[in-house]
Amino acid sequence: MIIGVNAGTPLRGRRVAIVGIGAVSACGIGAQTLFDGLMSGSFSEDRRIPGFDPQDYFGPKEVRRIDRFAQVSFAAAMEAYEDSNLSERDVDVERAGVIFGTGIGGMTTLTAQQMVLVEKGANRVTPFLAPMMMPNAGAAQIAMRLGWQGPAETVTTACAAGTHSLASAARLVATGRVDVVIGGGGESVMDPVTYAGFGNMTALSSSGVSRPFDVNRDGFVLSEGAGALVLEDMDHAMARGAKIYGEILGAASTADAFHITAPRADGAGARRCMELALEDAAITKEEVGHINAHGTSTPLNDQAEAIAITALFGQGTVPVTSAKGVTGHSLGGAGAIEAVASVLTIESGLIPPTIGLETLDPDITLDVVQGEARKLEQPIILSNSFGFGGHNGCVVIGKRA
Amino acid sequence: MSDDAAFEKFKTCAVEVLQVSPEAVVKEARFADDLDADSLDLVELVMALEETFDITVEEDELEGVETIGQAFDLVNAKL
Image (tube, rainbow over all chains, first blue to last red):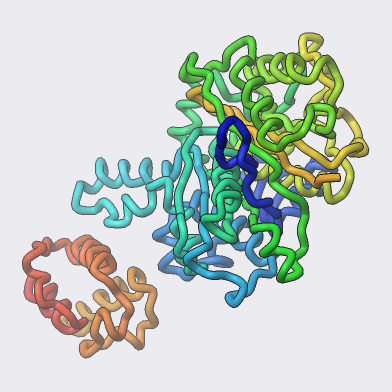
């Protein structure tokens, strides 16, 4: 990653190792469960996290006082932490951080307390409203449990929040501010108000089927979930003999500066973001073995993303997949879940197919992995996320030759 | 309502809100030291008590309330 420009020369930062992964998704609990679900196309009907029980992570008092979005964020982060095999003696707590995003935060708590206000009066609204609904509640819970006292922050860029969080987390390692950081994103807004809002803006699939890049795609399918990566200074990780999945090689962020919900039809902002991420990673586009697309299954996103990818990479040159046919769209959780999927794609050497896709839209000029998994030829993956507001985020995950 | 019956209802609220065992809810128990309850826990407990007993407790009445017994007397006096 580039951490500055010195007299026209990019200043390279420290290498950022990926040493732990965690995910909770519509496939169930765990990163491997996610990847198995992507490969087999199995997921919960309602796109909630099957088998998730907050009591596995929190005491009874905490369960009541932590919104579910923060609970699922915490669950993914703890899995990633355990997977990293970090022990207390490996970590200088002042040089350890948490960057955990969400698109919305504790909407479920807010809407429930609004009902309390109307039905029972102001005196009955919980004193925990603010700490439950605040979008940084997930990051705070993770930092508190681990006792990590470096930067603990939250990025809220809608559906790009997970990817932007990972990018910020990686940059903290690259610049030398921290030795270790948990980056990720989580979301749980399966409440009637959220459904109504997204439904009325016609963003949700009316058929209830997530079919990225399909000619019959009709919107996204809302889901809950979270993903997390433990990132560590490469030298630090090697010194303690950590399992290293790969690296965050680069990342980038751009804005469409165009429309509050619609992407630019020419995909220019997304294209520029991908281009900058490759520059940040100091790789050529020919080195990219796979693109893990944002691929929401909305007519506008998938078309604009296809145009952007084609403009940068050429027609059908890179295998593309979207996880959202399986996971649905967990907004601020999505980019982080897809980063975990990307890590396991490298680990297994197999690109999962785009489940739900039956008939590729003839206007989508991409090589979409369809039907069966495909061999990953080069272990470098570009993962895209694009959020309402025109926020574009790209992260490059991989192993250098 | 007898004092004993009122205290049983009080105890049910405390167990539910503070997530402590019924045996821990004795009149001598101190909120902070014995029941691990902070100021926000007390706010929640008072809300539950107001609802259960259909009473109103003003914020300034809670000043100096540090034990289960003090809190119960405050509630019981309003019944």
